[in-house]
View 1 (cartoon, rainbow, N blue to C red):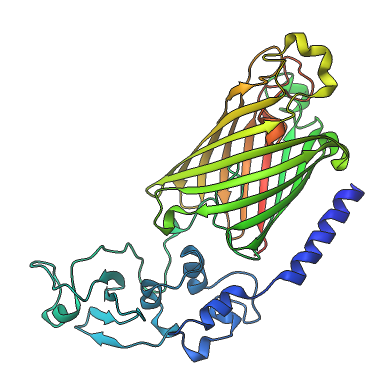
View 2: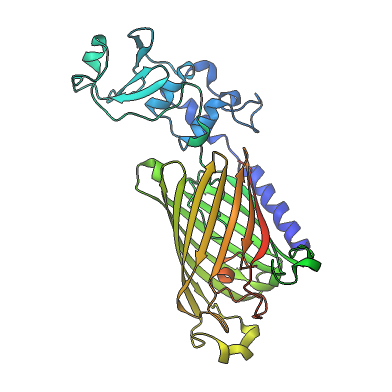
Length: 404
């Protein structure tokens, strides 16, 4: 625990030294930003001193991956300076694109991107006064000006699905603290005297994610069982909301037992996520784990599947169903495809969670067959002892706190 405490103190100190108001600088440098809002933390935050909850513009800015677009300017015209043409009591044209490639038709708070080079088509429903500057273009799904729909806010703020990596958008100086907890006693074996496993010991995972640059994150974590320390580097290749068909991230990492002193297991992992509408998301996360056999269990090699292999290739599959704007049911399945496949019975890790999101927290109530929460643990999924109950369902939880 002294090692863990020192690790957290050191990393939090580094975070405070490196934190910069990058997003405020990005707003201030925008060619159309309004002078009264430049350099002010209250532009995005409720607290004029900065930090803490964001205001409506800050929420929309974050939901737009901290990118200023003509549509965002038109939704919050008080924060920008550009010409506006009033068409009638319900419609305006906002010339909020510095390049002049698009104009924004704003009707009753709904924004629509227009190509000025093409005339409007018949029946487009635009006023005649808009004809010189309007054309048929894709309608942008927007909420009334100054408001962000709860359904449009991202559900998965965490860098983890449950155990599998989450391809979240990474920005410089983003930081998260992640706590994961898995009880060791099975949920439905001897449950009455052990209160569904709550009286048992638990594996506790404490991790910190930090965005060193846009699209690049480093992570450091420690688990109680085996005093396992994990170091990772994650790259955010692209995000679905940026125009790509899916979100994709890659992770390379190394785990070491006894406070990174022995039995090192490198791993390579991809995470590809596709969202379908506002409610459903699917995740594919293949991983290759090296040095995956537990050398303490050498006497069980005669009962191992592919005991001559010392790597494990698995394919993580995830499904998320958002049943409310801030509540989802999430599931994972991690079958092993090649290499070492465990002892006695090939039992892939299975996890299900009820996930609740608040402003800066994601809380997950978890039921999982794996007490391990790192790729070298839930990938081979041999359990803590290779007994018949090692891979039974157990209770647990995840808590993510987004610091920045």
